[in-house]
Length: 81
Image (cartoon, rainbow, N blue to C red; front, side, top):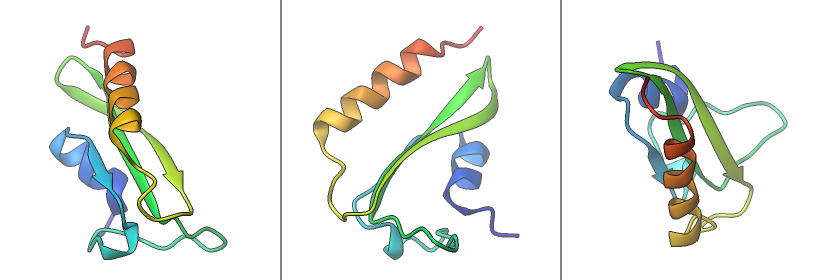
C-alpha cells in the first residue's frame, strides 16, 4: 500500500525535500489540498521513527536552503533518546 511521502520518511528514516510534489511517485492526493513543494522530517526515539513533521506549500519551488536549515534545527530539537 502506498502510504505517501510520510510513509517513505517513516520507512527509511530520512527527510524528504521536494520542489514539485506532483512529480513524486509516492505522492497521494488529499481532497481539497494540492501541495506544490514541501519538506518531511522524521521524528525519532532512538532508532525508532514514530512520526513525521511536514511543511507543505501550495507553490512549487518554495523549499530553499533556509527551510532546509530550519528542518535541521527541528531534527536537533527532537534528538534521539
